[in-house]
Image (cartoon, rainbow over all chains, first blue to last red; front, side, top):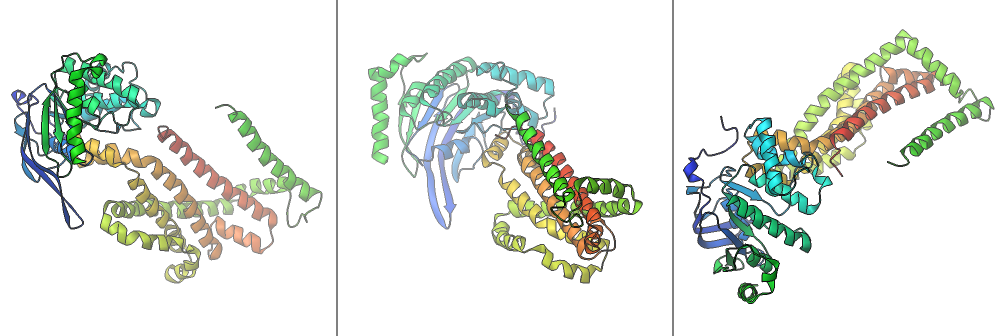
Length: 268
Length: 251
């Protein structure tokens, strides 16, 4: 099939979802002033891991995510996704879920999920089938023909996740996807995401403000400092899988959360 | 949708009441029937006018002018509006000037149009276009600005080409605003053309209405008013129904 969109053709072997970030910095030029958003960030994420980025507001964690998505270019350093540089968005390698569901209100849930496939000229029937699978995966079977305004906040974000998954990218980047949801929905969505992650084996890099969410979801938490954003700590969350609600009250959970909080308080 | 029927009934009741009041005022000679011929007489005159070849010709002339002015003003205005909205620097320079121009009553330029184009088709179309283009430009700018940055970001992150972004994000985002703009532009356009006809013209329904007025032919005048009003309302309603169908997702 002739690729219609801006997609780098890739060998199937190069789709493992590993991320290597080395010496990445980003400088913004705003009205003559240079703002260093991210400075000298290096880390590596192995395929299939769930890594959470936390840090105070404006620490450049979202900028970092945008760079991994190919939506922004680093000023310095290099980013490899599945072993190849990511200079432009490549939905074959990376799926992105934004803070706002950002669904197109004129399309149904199903059509929203099909959107990335439609851009590549995938046949309608195949598209519909894949969207159906993705919607089923996020627990929205039977809601495909609804429009976004007929869905709740949590359901919209599920559609957005399904859209990120529909092309089966090995890496899923999530920029505070549950920030706009209420606490209850947020907890449920966290469990749902862990279920989807376990079912698909994807690498997930997840940005959040919530320390509880970070520890609850992650294999590893990367803590960033306030501007200029640098890595100040990396914690391995040793809690067993599957995670459960009872762990939130445990000592391991508490001490991990405190350790992150101390870093953030220092730089805030 | 409870009460829709009730609302419709109330609306019809107001129209009927107005017609009844009109008929009574005239028939009972509360208002001089020479100034206000009765509703029934006016409607009878309307039917008669529509049978006259000269009136039908006037309608064709006006329709031609309106359509030409519209077909010119909409794409030209939309293109200018789009270019303005897409270039931040240009937009910042030009937008206040456009607002200034928009606020000037267009009718004061009418004598100039006659001096430049003479009395005829070009003068009326030119003035119609002039009356319409500013609102088209401003509405298009608003329509482009109604496209959400987050939607563009989504399109970009899934590797959309510029053409795909235009057709799959810009167009559907802008459609409801554009249809509304189209409808409002037609109101300005019709006003412009008819005003030009009433001011100086040899034909067209506006010219007829003006001359009926000057000659104190009240029945013809009122029938003409009803005719133009009906045409304007019909166009407006057609576009509005398309608008509703295209923007069911807007809440």
